[in-house]
Image 1 (cartoon, rainbow, N blue to C red):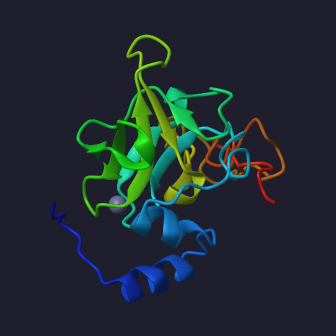
Image 2: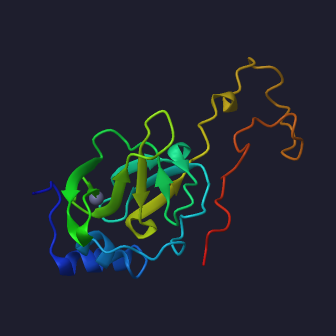
Length: 180
Ligand SMILES: [Zn+2]
């Protein structure tokens, strides 16, 4: 099978290194290895955002489809439509459904039919195949002040929270923890 993004092993290795991917990321994504259960950085990681292919950056999952399957790998009940290609995997004496990135062919994990509703699917992924991006704070339309031209000379002191537009409210939601 061919994928839109093609690179040599050396190129993938260099790319993964430059992205500070986990050491096993190359073996997992390019040689379908499996990281050890309960070792992945996203196995117990619940920040809001999205999960992308570590190799090519394609968006694969939203964090609100992630659930704790207790299996030791990050699990999702729904993938971004079209982002994942399924392949029948007959290795290790089992018949499983392998999941790879539709854009670059990176091995991600497997999908099983024992997940929660509404899909009943469990995308059992390797953390090493994923790259988490936290949600940016939503653009704030209330930051636009539109109250005419009253007292243009009187500039409110920036220390007064009531008079300053809420341009910076919320700030950056920073993902906490998860670092090993
Ligand atoms: Zn990819």
